[in-house]
Length: 386
Ligand SMILES: [Zn+2]
Ligand SMILES: [Zn+2]
Image 1 (cartoon, rainbow, N blue to C red):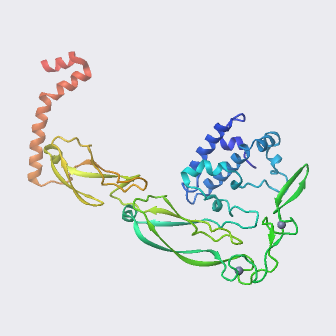
Image 2: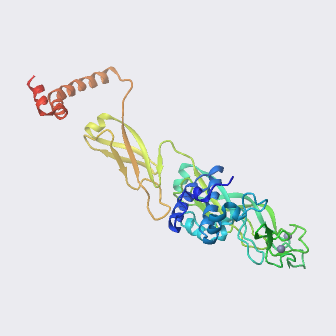
Image 3: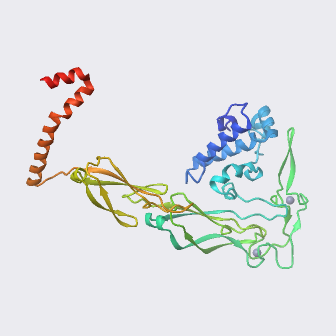
C-alpha cells in the first residue's frame, strides 16, 4: 500500500509551495544515501519523499492527486502501469540538494542517466568507498591508484554500437519520439517505446564486439590525489571517470567516498581535534610544563599554577587542515586528573600529610563560608560561635 504523499512529507493538505519545499529539503538531507551508506530503508524513504515532492510540487499533478489519489496517477490498482518517477525530469530537485551534495549525481541513484532526443545517454555515475587511516585523512595522499570495473566505449565501433559501414535508424514504432501512447481506462499515458527502449533510434546491424551496446566491461586504473583534511563521508568527484554513455553519450562521474579509521587518542569534530589527557594533580596545583604529542610532533604546553581539574587547553593550528579555506583547525586537550591506584610508602605519607594540612585549612575557613551560603548567615554564624 502506497503511503499518502502529504503524510510522507509530513505537511497538511493545504501546505504552500514554500512549506512543502522546506519539509522536503529537511527529509532529503536526513535520508540522503550519502549520509546513510548501506541503509536500504533510508534509501527507500528518500526515494519515496522525492517521488512525493515531484508530484506535489507540480500544480497539475497535485490537482490530479488531490482528486483521485494514487490511482489518478496510474498507480494502485491500475494494473501494471505504475507512475514513472524520474527525478531528472524536474529541475528543482538538483537545485534543492545541489548546494549540499554537488550536482550530477542522480543519474546513478535512480538508475540510468538523462536521455537525449538523439538516443545518446549519459553513462552512470559510480561510487567507490575508500578506507583511509587517520593519518592519511589528515595529511592527504599523493597518488592513489584504484582498479575500477566499469563500462567503457567499445573500441570496434567507437561507442556507436553499429557494425562498420552501418548507422542507427529512426525507430519505426515510435518514429523517433521514444514514447508511445497507451490507453488505460479514462487515461491515456505515454510510456517509453518498447521497441527502442525510449531511445528513438534502433541499430539495424549491431557491432559484433559489443552487440550494439556501444560499451564493454573492462577494469581500468584510475589515479588521483587525496587532499589533506578529508573526513568520513567526504566525496571526491572524478569527472568523466564513471561509465561510458550509451550510443556515444557522455561518461558519468566516479565518486570516491572516504571512510576514515578512528585513532583512539583523538576525537575529530570537523577540522578540530579533541584529546583527553590525564595528568598528575600536583602539576595542576603548582604549575609547570607538559610535553604533548600532536599529529605534527610534540608540543610543549604550559600549565599555570592553580589550574582547575577540568581545564581545556587549546593548541591553535594543531588540528586538521581545512578542505575549504585555508589553515587548520585546533587541538583541544581536555585535562583529567589521574588518580594513582598504588603509591610508594613515601608518596603515601606525603599525600597524607598534605591531605591533613588541607583539611585543617578547610575546617577553619571554607566550611564556614559554605554553610553560610546554604543555611543563611544566621546558621553560619552559629557554627562560628560553637
Ligand atoms: Zn561495439
Ligand atoms: Zn521507438
